[in-house]
Length: 386
Ligand SMILES: *Cc1c(COP(=O)(O)O)cnc(C)c1O
Image (tube, rainbow, N blue to C red; front, side, top):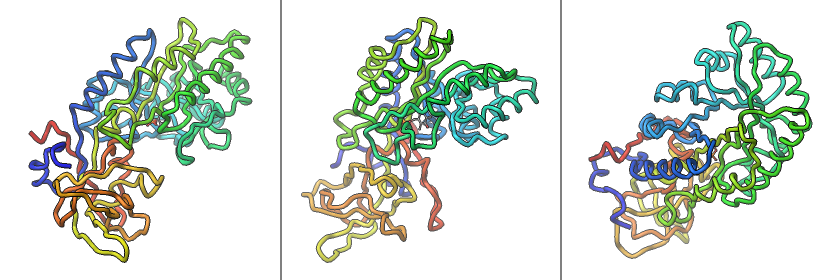
């Protein structure tokens, strides 16, 4: 599959590396902005954990999105990339004291609180600084997402959030504290969700919870429904920009917002997933017993999703137009799970060919590790390869 990548420019780069199509990223951001702007008080944050490459963050920050962080390190990365602290939300089940203090020092927009002990610590640490922390409660809505078991987060069995039956209790506690201000409810049901029915189930749950609060004359200013919109891994070219129109329209139609409420989103994968590819070079073509292997220089240390979640990434030989043959595409790491794909049809592979693993912009580079004492892959953006 020649022709879709600037392969001549790739030849001088050390493989494996990530390549990001800046034009696609900007188009995606434009669509997100235009679709969210159709509704009055929709506010979109980018989930930094999907990809924190500074060049990517800088493009996303330019578009005006806020930042959703899940660690102190991500708050630092967001601030460094120029996201205003007033647009940073911070979730996570295990926020440590230094991380909470960092959020307090920057006066971030909101802590999404996941337990009562965490609420108490935030109140104490804020008191010590003479501050009042804005907090939202992350409620576990017990809504299942039809996605891989390792990436559902909104079931009662998952570690995330506060159970619905404890909601009233923690709200009462927060209302009685001097150094936290209860401003919202937060939810996040999982990732790679393509069935709008899952988001509708979340909307229905949020509507019920809001009714309960309303009966207590509580109307929070902010509702945050997290992220989770999926991408088309099977056909990266068919739908390079996810269907944000349908996504936002679903929430508009099914979530009953009170007039003064703002609806927040935290999108990760759907923002950056399709713009990135892992580019790797074929080291050897090896004949196995009943198959042939394309052994490439990238492995699970560069892109762990196939090994970790049996995730599918479309694989292409971007330097060959010869007729296809079937290969197992494997990396060099000493683990049997270091396989990018089995029985994959690729244009005939020869030593030195470049292979692209598509749709790798989210949870790719950021999850790279140094296992086997390997170097981390570099990330290049199309802008800089001109
Ligand atoms: C991971 C995460 C997101 C982003 O999820 P995507 O599936 O990448 O959109 C949003 N909010 C929270 C709290 C998260 O942990």
